[in-house]
Length: 200
Image 1 (cartoon, rainbow, N blue to C red):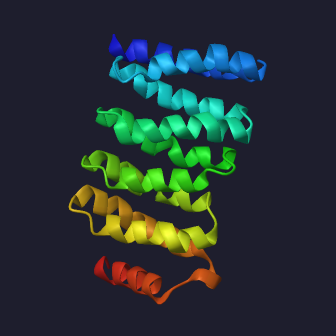
Image 2: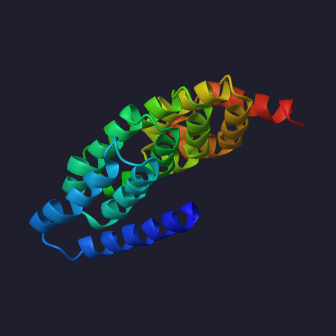
């Protein structure tokens, strides 16, 4: 029964996101945002807050960058750092990198939030971040890969959880390939070669 209710909510979320694309900005704020805020309320059901995360991604796809930066990114950051439910934080980790193409000036905030999620006390959240490292690298500059993503990869490769480490190891080749020759560092080559030889 819970699964059926969740599927219904997902359909409603998609419909709400589609309708929002055809509303005036003021109406979006009054109608759509109030609905999202009700779902995202930390005192509400966990499944509603989890649904709100996916709704925010749907809204980001149809909103102009200034609205994505001003509302969607701010709300996701708050849910990532303040929500008490691990499933909600995992949901944010799952979709956060997909919001980057629709953002304008707050990409640094998204990167910082992703780093915070990658240090979450729950290994399931950290594992989800490791799985999304490739997506993160595909949506940021090569310099950001070298300066932000690679240090994060190193941290996840050394994580206390075996499951996080395994997911992080799968991302090494992608990160090294995406960084490009201008930002390639010896440390990256060493990690890549070590990983290959250790798993032969």
